[in-house]
Length: 169
Image (cartoon, rainbow, N blue to C red; front, side, top):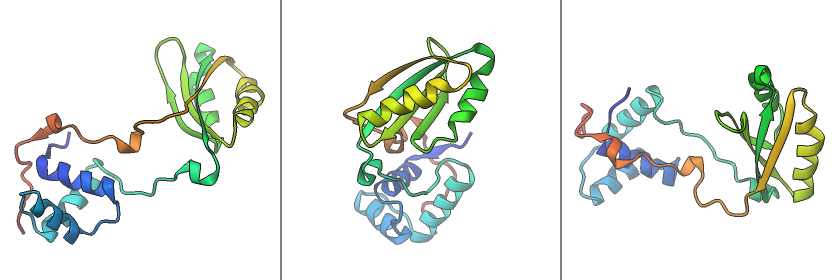
């Protein structure tokens, strides 16, 4: 398990604000907040965070800008011996942004993006429900998303005092 410190957390938060922010800008902004770190140390820490699998820097698509303004959460009940097989099959559908196997009342949870509710209805009734081993689906339209997974921030309580990484270089 990678141990993250306050400086790593600040770097991650700044990259979440702008994934293309330069190491020089990150060092400057941390300096303005009362910390002290060089551009070189920022670069080293980002590389280490990536190598350890703590972060990945990538583009985040905004489905609404592509006209896909309707979001639906769909819970799928599946025959017990086919959960993984059905979940794997769902990987083929571009309109699904999230797939997870769960424990509880339902077996698989997916999030669907669509242009309108008719498109959601068609996908759920004519595609998902027709996958062999699917027993039942429950759909909820999501009109407001207050926080998405890519907006999750590292809790301050997860930080240790100093990770051994240099703050000056």
